[in-house]
Length: 257
Image 1: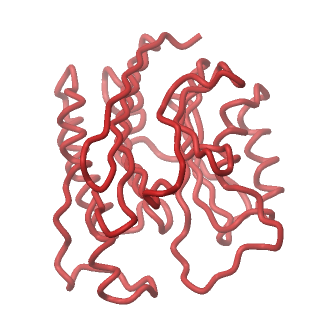
Image 2: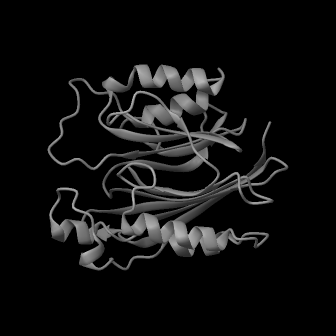
């Protein structure tokens, strides 16, 4: 499940939404690369072929949504839990006004294992979690980061990623997607003294600490950069990886309808 989402929201003079995100997952989990879905033509996203949902995507109408799980060792999903990737699909495919969609999702939040969800359109983004919250909150303008804690939890990868993204978005235009991909490619573990204690043990904390993860059987499967300008033109680029090696690139550009 997506492990790091960095985004600059409603602050840049040209790009109201800048996203740089990494999806970390087991290498053997079947996945479809980003593309326009044939069965839901208004959705641009990669796809989890095991459960049918997605971790991050955009709609032709300009909705954005991304999902991470919550790192909580020992917690058990509810009996008969639904796939969390369906939450992003619901946001992107439901044509009702977004507040109503999010209210409905929160009412159903007990049917899912713990998650974080970002959803919205340029200029208005929301964050929700079923860890303990009962509603979505609107995200303030600026640079934010989400990993497997709450939004802007100061884990080293989140803090460093936010700093690097804010620097990339500080007035430079046009923004070079390669600069954002270079942020996402940072694979150096952080010093042990900076690591959080999330219950997985110090060795695993160290392995999971970089922005780009590579371990035996698990790691960063794709990096996604999204640039949406104030004319409603979206650039969506996905780079895929296997065992830490580049495995392809998908690039899309479209006008929001």
